[in-house]
Length: 100
Image (cartoon, rainbow, N blue to C red):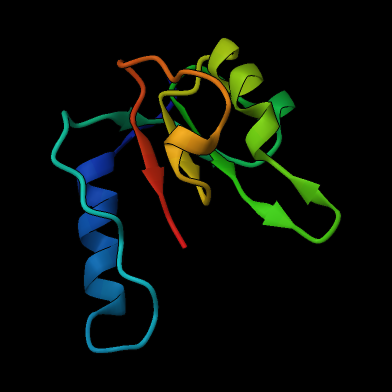
């Protein structure tokens, strides 16, 4: 079984790392804790428990690939677009955190 990290632990560590700086703060989250097996940006790398990072890059956008990441077992989605602007419904069991 792969090693996991707690979403709450990661958000807490992120908050501590950027405290007192101008770097973006982690998004607010009050849902259930999630055990994560890794962070990935490519749907081919998604495994059950992964956090899929959907971001906008020059010439590409990861948001249209969220359904594939969910089908691969992603347990958390980090995205730049508001959830309501994605054009599809996210399952209530998989948190979506909007980040800058």
